[in-house]
Amino acid sequence: MYKIVSAQFLAENIKKIEIEAPRIAKKRKAGQFVMIRVGQTGERIPLTIAGSDPEKGTITIIVQGMGKSTKELNLKEAGDTINDIVGPLGAPSHIENFGTAISIGGGVGAAIAYPTAVALKEAGNYVITINGARSKDLVILENEMSAVSDEAYITTDDGSYGFHGFVTQKLQQLIDAGKKIDYVLAIGPIPMMKAIAEVTRPYNIHTVVSLNPIMVDGTGMCGGCRVTVNNEIKFACVDGPEFDAHLVDFKNLTDRNKIYLPEEKQSAEAYAHKCNLQKQVYATIGVYNAIIMTFMPFFSLPGRAFFG
Image 1: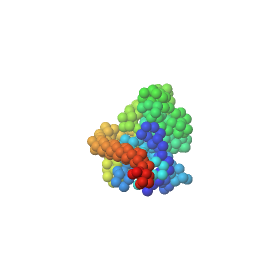
Image 2 (image 1 turned 60 degrees about the vertical axis):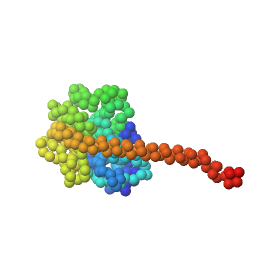
Image 3 (image 1 turned 90 degrees about the vertical axis):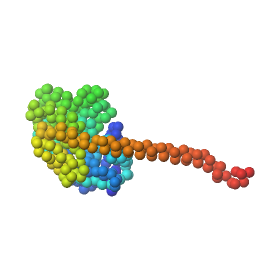
Image 4 (image 1 turned 180 degrees about the vertical axis):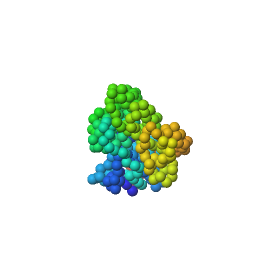
């Protein structure tokens, strides 16, 4: 069992969780992830290590509550425990002094873009970060990204904060302004990563994406996370999760990620129904408790006084 040290929501359905895992904290590197099982009967879910504190022996993950398991994980608070954590898994980010490096995070992808931005800065790069979200209230890790950046930009789809537009548009703006860019890392929804690859392709800018296919074991045994890169089959959990964006077959990745959508929807609906039933039960218990507390003084009176 792994103890949760702290837990706090950064935005709606997005929670930052710090967990005691000393051996993982000492070994993890930027770009790696862990496989987590919330309870004994739960599924294994891959989550990127957003940070670690080797001295405290903790790792930090950022979780977006989308399906049953991630929603269960986001119900956890400080002092609670998680059943299993395996890691660090995956190949670390390839870090060197490229020159000018841009780390782009879309939505919760900022949780992956941030540790890589830290590593790029430590390697001597001029670091530019682009942190995108649908709206202002969904922007995460703004201060953390800014602290490790030579230039930091926020973009929102609705224009409620920062640059009004997509991360791709901000990147194109930087390119059009004559900014010399040597390396781009993009992490976020598949359409966003594909769009980034198409922006940088004409300029032959080395671009890397961190892929998020379906994973089961995270060690290369099940083959569930296979992706097509340069017309070859790769396993994201051991060969990646980072790959050359210009060589990734994004259509294949998108199609494979849709395979279990009906089952995921069914599981999420069943979980929501269970939660609603629990709320009804708790509400009923609350009513009964109120009734009992109302009449308790009468039952505690001496028999002679109560019955006359």
